Length: 292
Image 1 (cartoon, rainbow, N blue to C red):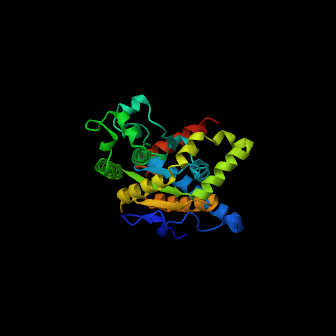
Image 2 (image 1 turned 60 degrees about the horizontal axis):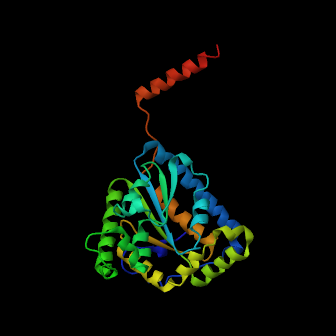
Image 3 (image 1 turned 90 degrees about the horizontal axis):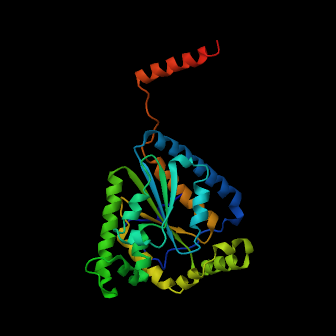
């Protein structure tokens, strides 16, 4: 599958022209599900080798507007991955304790260990997205020199973009593969999914009145995403903008990208030394002798 068209490494992302749907999966659903299962199996096997050697860690970042399908994406793509080497972190509104630290403090606490796959369901990018749409939120952090919303300006966010670029470069130098996905859903599809949450009793629990309030800032969020992606997409750590109106096809794209990225790592099981081979042979003899 050709996925290069979803990859952004510089300042060429235009959210208005980026597609939210490229294919209807209905006619090819069986074939698509089969490909996803193949990719999931590949990710599962790669994670075993990662865990055995602990040279590399994988951090998968999902950002999206509400109802874009992040939760179902995560549950489908990582089905079967050994939970011992896998974790998901959700970042919501910062707590009082988190606000008394720098904004990356809570992120560092949730980083996966090398050898593990970690998923951020929302991430440190919330601090250049939600806070850009609602700059008054920044005032809660008591940052020196930030006295009013007028101080939460372009210069402020340019500094944060630089923080994020350097932070991701630091992680990459320390053995982390970072794969960033923006699930790009249309306003019309979001409306359809919100209505489904309201009209379907078993989905009522998913609905939040806050989602409707945030929908009123749709255009502001679109601008914030465009700016954040353009400012933090690099050749080393690109962004992947995934058309998300069709859930199954978006899962196929994401699983394919992840499979290729993870398998690009020089993964292998640890080599056994002569001493370890001797120890294994001795252990085998002892176990067989128990039956005699």
